[in-house]
Image 1 (cartoon, rainbow, N blue to C red):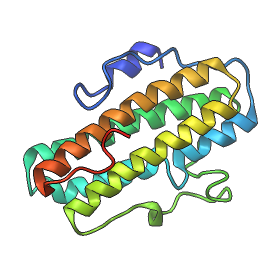
Image 2 (tube, helix red, strand yellow; image 1 turned 135 degrees about the horizontal axis):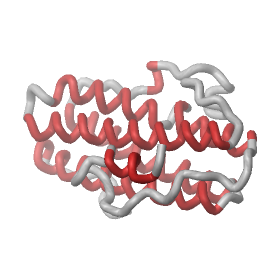
Image 3 (cartoon, rainbow, N blue to C red; image 1 turned 135 degrees about the vertical axis):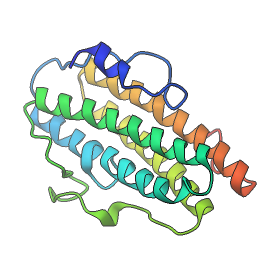
Length: 184
């Protein structure tokens, strides 16, 4: 998939407006592929985020249409991140099965990784926390992966995660009268 195809899947307002860098790697590297498997489908991963936000969408769309659109579009943006990571993992020589590596002991993804919650305010706080944790993981991997192409891609994904934090905090304020870890 070319760079322009990634950009066509972006969700205006729900992702950073800057373009994604070209999706490429310097050379195959199975260790880097294993690191990225945790971002792809580990405990704190794009697959977990997609699943969690879709679960929250199923309930929130009946509370407020815009809130439902928020969860739906953020999960679609996370799907784009997952696709980008899958493409990188393949370029590195890996196999993007729905599993993590280090965070899951190479086990397949599990629905227990999701914060389900039954209170909208707690769900939104958990979603914000998940975005912060994902950013921390991406920053660790930027330090561990000595490939400037992958580093640029991960830095670009972080920009989207920051947008998600801002949007989730905006919803948290609207529906719960508070914010969570705003501006960190």
